[in-house]
Length: 286
Image (cartoon, rainbow, N blue to C red):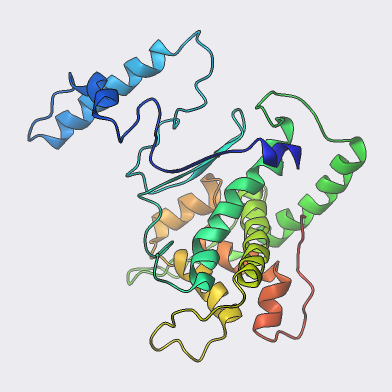
């Protein structure tokens, strides 16, 4: 709880170093020459950013910095060494977030991602850093032993998954998911989905279960089911054989299909919403 209280939240756009709402704060970028060549613009921008990074060497950590992210970045992150989460404006758009959507959709898509990033502060990497970002072991031996026991469930669960490309030219070849390599992200997916669902229930309670907008053609689904449909939709994608092979065997994120299937299998709320016979989660971290 202490670490959560110290968590820095960066949402939308930076308001310091630089402050995007203040023209004077952006004056340091005035020397960056922009032309009609996208390649050269990108090259010069990267060189400018590299100089900024080198200028920070030897100085105190700038906790207001966005660590290379911008307002237009379509991504999110958690940083252990500063204990911060970041959700740029570029990420806060459909299908992840929409201001006029039912809360079930926003919590199922963006909420699960927010929970995912926060949970990184308490996984195999984040557990090595305290609330101020210091590299220190703050877990007891008993907690660590139990954590590693639960970890093994995720390794086996995802390691037993085989994924297939879903493009028209797919070969039909299946690829095994590397459950150990993708462990941290799989844990974060499952923990984030559980946390987002609990947060959504609390939000509905605080709002007095007020009436919300409905989505055309989706009226047949309950709000609880809509929550998980939004989660799955946020990861919907097309991928070919080469990309799938690389993602399965070389990257820390499991293929999207595996992320959806694994996380929902680890959610008691999902199994209750869709009346599954077995309600017990396959794996559970927190």
